[in-house]
Amino acid sequence: MTNGEEMFTKGLCIACVISASSFGAEIPDQLGAVWKQFQECVKKNDIDGIMEMTYFPIKSNEFGGNIKSKAEFKKKYHQIFTPYIVQKIIYGKPERIASYRGYVVDCIDPNGYAIYLGFEKKGHKFQFSYIDNANE
Image 1 (cartoon, rainbow, N blue to C red):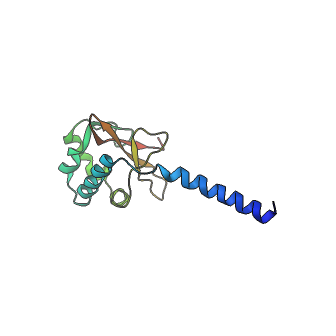
Image 2: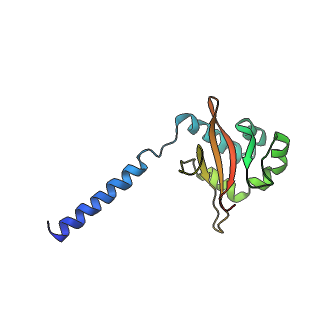
Image 3: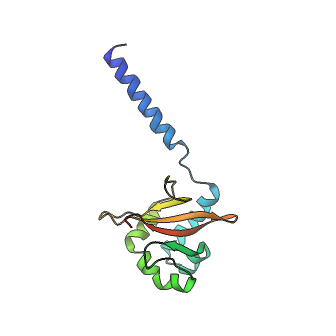
């Protein structure tokens, strides 16, 4: 095998590995439907709509710890859903990350503030269930 053929073969193998690793990247249909609704509620600042898709208590290592009730969530909403995080939600989508439960939305900002919003299947449906500051 010539150097050119060997380079081509290695490149092809790398492309196959990259393609295979993204093959299962789609989210379940049920989560996709919840996610679209969640995005719409966030766009409209519809706190009540978001709470309908939320499992309480929200586990959190940020914003003063676990958020135990809808009343507490309403008080902390604008602290959690900053303009930057709102944009990440509007243009992002949940993904699987090995060290997290369920699916997460990556809301890491350019300054390194590493917030992930977690969605897990609770009972028969996916719900927003945790907030993780990966720096903590």
